[in-house]
Length: 233
Length: 233
Image 1 (cartoon, each protein chain N blue to C red):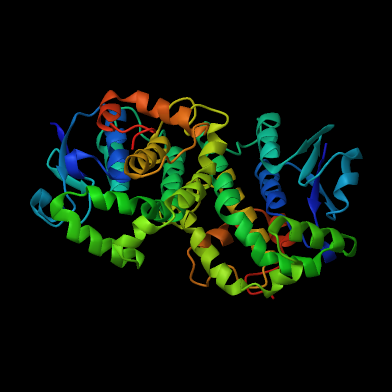
Image 2 (cartoon, chains in turn cyan, purple):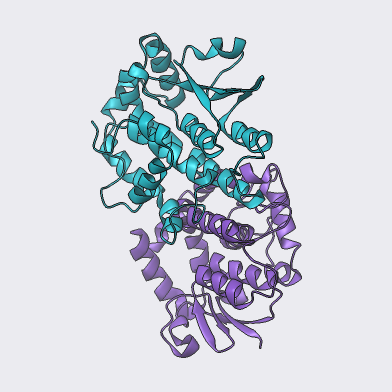
């Protein structure tokens, strides 16, 4: 049965969640067919009969599973006959650590750089919710996000990605010769950041770019649905 | 033949380098006998016939190998008949990423919290070198390190260790049921930070403490040579 993926969309259907991209990569890696069910922020409480607070959420053969990490573990266990997403316990721990490094050290600052831009592009019914929730979470009114020195913050954020560069110096993927979930975590983050950022997030000669191009070349559907480019506005 | 480990020592032989602790763990994991050759900072250019700028450096059967990461890869390859330090390519990548996360996101700030204390404890011949090199590297005179709000900085640093907590929530070691080099990287960092810090680095109820105690219980020689405790001055 086709899996349903509830994922976040901005205006014009632009997908805007690092965690939803991670799940898309995981589904593609497993070769599982899925149907996208885009939602606005304020639409989330109505999906799957209610009770959900965040996306991604998937419906897989009658089961509803929320939280990108929990979904990844679910897919690995429930579809064990498909290619492994983690490559065993060490690969699972590796991916978990990469995921936690992004949420601990990188995500909050990255969100600040994109919030002003995302606010312009949320669906109309989300505008009040987005403005108020971000102001509360970050302790500054939405206008200050666009006034923030975004280019400077991005320069700092580029440096926070150095652990990726260290590992990729020697090999094509974070996981070695072929990609696994550690790669999908990092690529999901970059897909979101690139699409949402008003500034180029990586410099042209960054060694992460060839790796990112390899990631986009893996799955045509992901490449197609992430329509903006490094050079996009 | 016994391996010689050149490692950094302060006054009274206190060992003070996260990277040297990592190598000690690696040697112990492989069950390799080693002889410690402590050096002061200013003694480093004289070891191994000259040409070295940093420790750890090991002499292993006539080969001189420098840099903790290069040493770990050397030990894994040259002593492949011993227990694996990485557990395969994914474990190697995992350890590499953990290592790079420490150097990128944690080490510099941690060094600032301990520099004032280490300065009091370096060997007499190191005092001028240490004062001048740290002032240059961090752009502030050594007196400002001791004047810095160390307790506040440590509180921030505690939070930077969250990725370790995320992985350790589910299992006894970062690497799973048994420790591998990813654990040794993190434990080496904490051994150094604990020994050099003028303040307690982890709070009493931190979930990292049971893990750290497991790490110290692995190898009696490491436990013995890291004489200071969480409650030490």
